[in-house]
Image: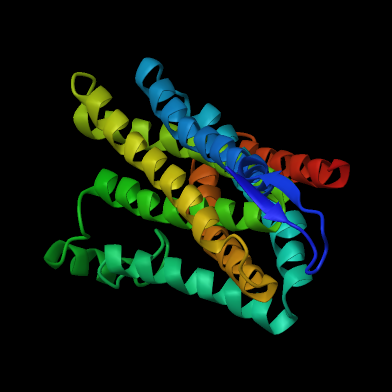
Length: 288
């Protein structure tokens, strides 16, 4: 099919194939979408890789401390050097701060929901009171279910962050995706170890693959959805959403990854691996 074009009143006409017009509108979308697809797939595959590793070998506490600590450092570096600077570039300071606080509030609300509104650290004075409360009103599932289901919901936030990042800058999305992939490996290992402790050697494989598979689906689907829904949105809105993703991931890092790494540390392995992950993102950000 062809379209006749020409200026009003002009004697000549020009024939332009319709398929060439379609190509000019479709091709710019293919590259970014394929990038999002690849980053989301890598992040999803990382969760399954962590779970598979937990099935075939039992990681030592030192190994887990290093892996989880490194993931925590990578995420901290991603917030500091990529996500928040980009959010401030796209939106005003007030909007970026509000987005960051919103992300923290959302994940904190999820944390309270899962634990029925009662949370206390091991050395908190309120710990006995919270323990008595949880004997009467148990958290929503056993320890594995709480951790894995909560992680799956949190992966939706991380996946959306990949999608928003790709809508802003593919380079930023790549760094964010790398950070989430490293985090997913450590989470897969941690969940696998916890399932081993609860279920024993005979039953752990299927349950590990079930939960890490759910995490993989969550991050992949939400990354694609985030890009499709948010691509082309106004920059201030993208900045707010990117800051919200940073806030939610920051909460997970400081309440989950870093304490988990420190609880298994030997010769301050957690602190050293956190620093290493932080510096890796600093170097990558400067080289990008």
